[in-house]
Image (tube, rainbow over all chains, first blue to last red; front, side, top):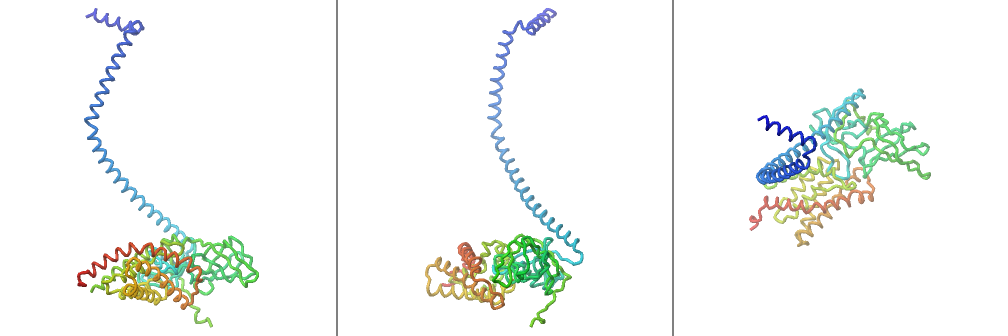
Length: 267
Length: 166
């Protein structure tokens, strides 16, 4: 036993000292190549036996994950919509808090006028919620229009971009009044502006309150183009509204404003 | 009794028009689904209730729209009259009649609307009406009339089976 131990120890000592390098190298190469050959065949056989089962499992897993992704995508879209609504509502709440002199009712836009000639929206609040004809409608950005017709649970709102709409406005910088009208293209034009007024791009346009249809000092937009000809009595300006009328979702109806009907006073 | 199907169908059509289609504009023109349904319904030979549908659609449009109430009613009734006239006396090719009636009905309803707004005190610039509303609407209506006609034809066959004519 002792002899065997000594022989093995001697061989190991020779191997460690490098004296058996050619022997150990050849032996190691043989071992590695043999192990490689066996390992390669084993893996191939293992794959051959297991891959079909894995493909089926992977397909099932893939289908499950795809369904999960679809469900999550739908959830993301829903949550994004809720976030957008919440942000809009938060902005409207901030607006109503910063303008506590008026009472507001929030309403969701549920449709538009079926005729392309008119620019009206349908909202989901009506006389049951205290809405009346003539009440102004705003967003946190500015003036939207006014209630044109009301039923129990819905109302029709005429936008200020409607071609039949006319709003008495005030130019903030010049402190002069004019009339704002809508167009078929959905733009806003400022008419009846006296020639002596110097209109500049960026001038802010507010409601004047004249005529009693709208409360004063509601923001409408800014002057973007001025058309002035010496032969005309008045100059004309195009207004960029602050409200994006194509993206209206939620609006505020000013419920404590009572429009004044001045029709009997008109000769 | 068969006329009652007009209530749910036109109700659904108006909801689709106001909630979806009126938001999808080409310039300022939109597809008029109500008009297309009226046109397609009127061109079904076995259908006997075209006038009722036009009347109901006109009343619904007058109720929901800010237009003078008589304008859409008159426009839809004239559309049915034109469609029945063309169907009975002139056209033998259904597709040609379909496109012709759609084209002229769009022009007719827009003319009636224009006149109605003028009577109520709003004079719109004719050039803008044609370029921004009427021509895009004609294009969209001609684009949508075929799928609408396919649906309405099936509906007409369901409500008025052809066997009853024999």
